[in-house]
Amino acid sequence: MSDQLTPILDCRVVVERGAFKLDVEVSVEQAEIVALVGPNGAGKTTLLEAILGWLPLTEGEILLDGRVLEGPGENKSVQTHEREIGMVFQDGLLFPHLNVMRNIEFGTGKSLENVNRLLTALEISDLVDRYPKELSTGQRQRVALARTLATAPKLVLLDEPLGSLDVTGRAVARKLIGNVLRKTGAGALVVTHDPADAFALADRILVLENGRVTQYGSPDQIRTRPATKWVAELVGWNFFEANGTGSLARLSNGTEIATAHSGLDGPVVVTINPTAVALYREQPAGSPRNSWHCRVESIEFVADVARVSLVGPFDLSADVTRAAVAELGIDTGSAVWASLKATEVGIQPLDG
Image (cartoon, rainbow, N blue to C red; front, side, top):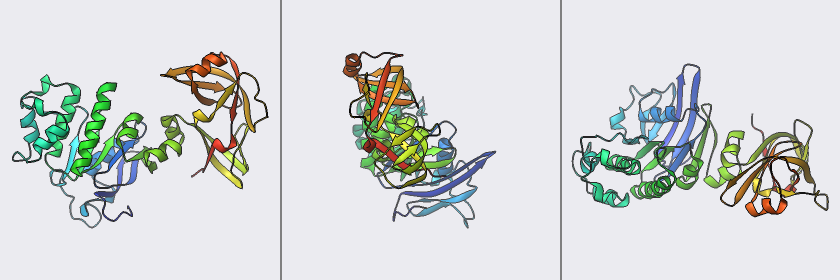
């Protein structure tokens, strides 16, 4: 369970479904947005369904604002409709025969005072008389969120709320959804497959792999200290397992990477930011401690950044500018030298 004093959500969720077992501890503070990311089949939707009360716990406990919803010693779990938890699905699930205002008011029993504030905050005030078929995908998602928040839930669960939007629509929706969630004070747990959504929207990111939490921290922590290979690939970092000896990390093929650490002794994880890898056509002068002769496998451009995939003593990615690629005159198959300062080599213990 969480060490926080008064989180909105504080739980340990254990659910067994056949051979798959989910065992997760998570806390969400008031007005905090937590993004839930992980590979397919990691258990993200299963976690939401258990918190919502759709799946019974095998073990564990769910507390919402200090109230036990489900746990040991409880004769029965609190029913879904009594949990003060709202759910927003990817497709919104609006009622097609009700206009926007009626959809938002549905389930509240009456028009709440905060409905107009929600309409304004989500920029849907001019849509109140329209029906779902007359709305864009992004507008339907904002209406669905307004309908959920109109019931004043303490926690909001969102399952891929931006998955159907284009790039422009996602950027707009991220800003509006983030602002309104924080203003209402509800905690939020958001499932997303898009790292851009997670890093732009969330206060913390929970990484779920094979039913277990492998990392839980701020976007900066996730971005700069990826704890697993999957996270490293998510944020675009190089990730290697190695054996540390003194200041050296030795890969399984015998390649040594010099680090700024000392006293290494045993299994470690090596992380390297692609932006820290410098490329040269000739072996760099001064014989830097980390310098490898490589071949360019591919070059991918995103705006002015070029992701250069290298094959050499080990596979490595480097991020350089488009101008640098032109100045070096490199292309697929080109021979280059990759150089890296020891101070740019990240080292973490290899858990498990």
